[in-house]
Length: 145
Image (tube, rainbow, N blue to C red; front, side, top):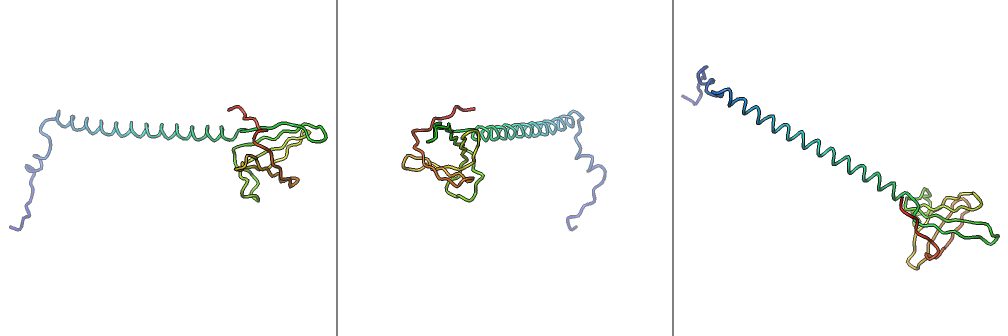
């Protein structure tokens, strides 16, 4: 009547594996799946670690000096301009986005730079509000780190 049936102990006993070896085989298979999943997680963690290290080292390599120009000013004192790939700390100039330094008589002045389509580099130095245009041919590529 009605599809409801009262289960007794004999019906439940039929659900269990008859052979203990079969039960151990099932547990062994579950263990293998868990071990496979754990190994996959370790592999994923290792991959993420490698990607993080590559990102960090790439960032460090890009932060180094890119180009440098050395010369003398009209007074005969030596000066050096170094261009970096890293972003500039000067946020007031929006079109010159990369960091530059001007070294003259041991004094370092921070600035920003950007290449132009006409073959010159535009530089701005915030300390004395100087704008400088230097031809690309003057700069030497710096060796990689």
